[in-house]
Length: 314
Image 1: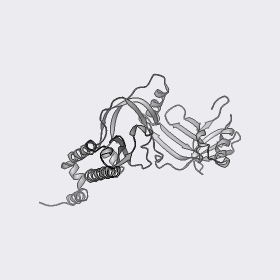
Image 2: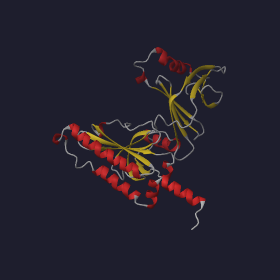
Image 3: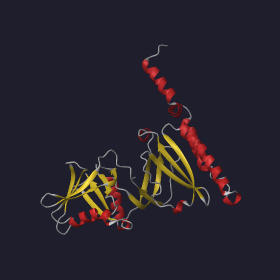
Image 4: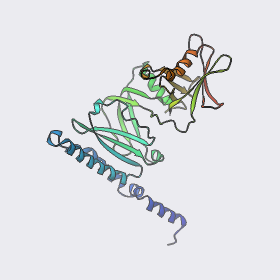
């Protein structure tokens, strides 16, 4: 049999990525499912804290899940698995407890092990391509009253990718790597955008332009987050000034006009000096009818969007 350069290249790639070959042509997928079953069933025989010293209990749990994480990571060519045992109650965690700035975090799941400890499982994509080669997908059912704030939030999520929080619903179906929840009962669903989700966008700023076209104030936007609409070209973008007092939310590219929603967070005032908050307060005070707010590339000439303050409105 004559070997070709393409065949040699394929053999070399197979040798470098045995997990990928095992996943598609061997029993890799079945082994992942078996190990994941072990991970979540492994919580059941754990002794109660009263039967074992806390240090020994945690050491046993950590050793067990570290071994499972290593085995899963060794088999799955697309995702790396992390398990962490913590003390506390899952139901007492804030709704955004799983937010992580690492861009390749694909999924976070919590499981209560006993009255004192819970398990955190993270799926971390090995590469950006993992999201397309082994995507995480699902069907979620949301219940929102007609003409309600919840309905508006869901519509803005579909059109612009805007996050929403605490909306009644359930999980109807999921598909993707093992470890994802299947069907669920009633609950409350939230969609979040992490602080690191700014993509490759340039640094941004907002400028307040007076009626005579002079620049009155300039604020750098920090903690910028962006998202795209599910059913259209819309973009949601949010950033804040360095003090955290003024948060600006933009809904772009999906309507007759773009929308700007400034939010003043007074909870950020304690501990701040006047020098911290005055730039944002002065911009708000001078945003009067006839003035224009501009979203622009920081330090550049390019103006991305403009908003004009009108008498009796914004």
